[in-house]
Length: 260
Image (cartoon, rainbow, N blue to C red):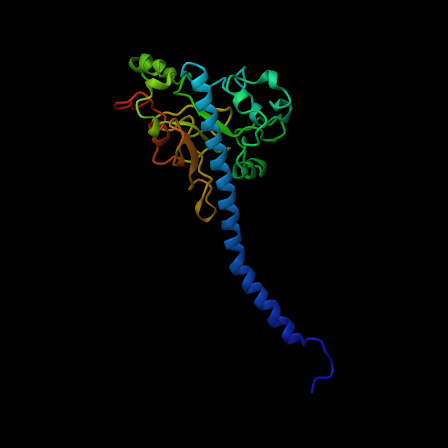
């Protein structure tokens, strides 16, 4: 008959083993739930960007803002997106034409993107600036941007006409804002986010969609990005195969040019 009220060593070891087994089962499920919650927030952010763009178009004769100046009126180059000194809520005079439709809203950084950016995976960041992400979404440069200069000369005029919503032939298949990685993707030569303008080419040798949502087995290059399209819907998009970002950027209808 046992005189004490405590546990024996064997009983304690059994309890610890059971807890360890339960934790091994629960932790992956909890991580998945957390990832799903972050992804819901990221999609909601982009949906809000779609609403903001809709209001801007309605107020500006259905013309898109210039893709290099939609956020910062001076273009926001040099790593401005991760420089806390240039937060636009605190410095609204620096904001571009779309900023008044986005101001005072906590919708500018996807938490999954934030985790990667602050983990040291920021190859395209300005090393002279602390990595304090302020704005993580990028505009399709084929919608009133400089992407006309990235295609063969015979297509310049067609792309330049895409400054108006009416020139987007299929708004459900042309994205307006999406996510980029903070690193280059091996095999695609995507350079990673360096400003808030996403300009793609058929071989993905400039910019392309992010790959960090739902990445398999820790391979950060195997996942997807979220994007909001000109018609306002949000969906998952892939940087693969090479050129897919470009196909979902092309606004002018018909077969887009290839081989550059």
